[in-house]
Length: 290
Image 1 (tube, helix red, strand yellow):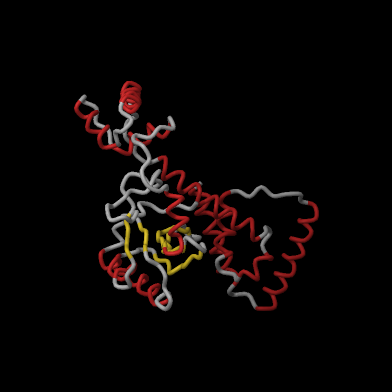
Image 2 (cartoon, rainbow, N blue to C red):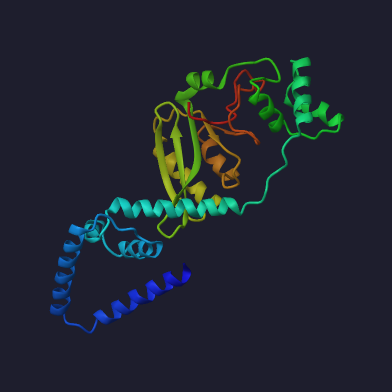
């Protein structure tokens, strides 16, 4: 595979070098002949099975031509983009296979013990269950206990306060959430895009993309957004995760405008209910699309 790619690149370079000594008239005449040959071959060929090397050469040449000139290729522009998407998918699939094995699975005995304790003590929460299991020699996190109970449709304690959907319905007009998503370039370079979303109207603010999102860059993008929504702003709560790129200076930009910054809890992202912070207001513990 690697040898064929190198061979195709060398052939392409030699062809480009051989074109330079020729005159413009000879090059144009050869171009007309080649175009006529392509038309004749397309009439009789039903379909061409492109090898990975041929796909790579066409994809590389497409980056040197404007999008308006792509119809000269023997494949459609959608095909070139599809080849790139397949290459990105294979890259991430290979990366996932190289990943180290995760934590061991919970034993059936421990899982049955968690369900038994929950059924016998319906008012115990995740942390109480975790502490009782630690006394018996089982070390489980609160997230693992929540996952075990969630698969069985059970909760560790009676429901208290508003649900997450009820909270969003009542407070969506003042909620703003932010996060990153990634895009792949033609060279499989990962770019991080910072965006904000207004939960009531689903309006999305794309602030910028960069290869290395530092805390200084993220803070500057937050200032740019604050200048855009400063006039008539009705946002009261900003929801973000615990990424280190969201530094203290990032929070101060919104705190100066009276916006309360709330971080999502560690371990899970979709809570079943809104925790009460004791002040009569419910803190948004995670943001989800609902």
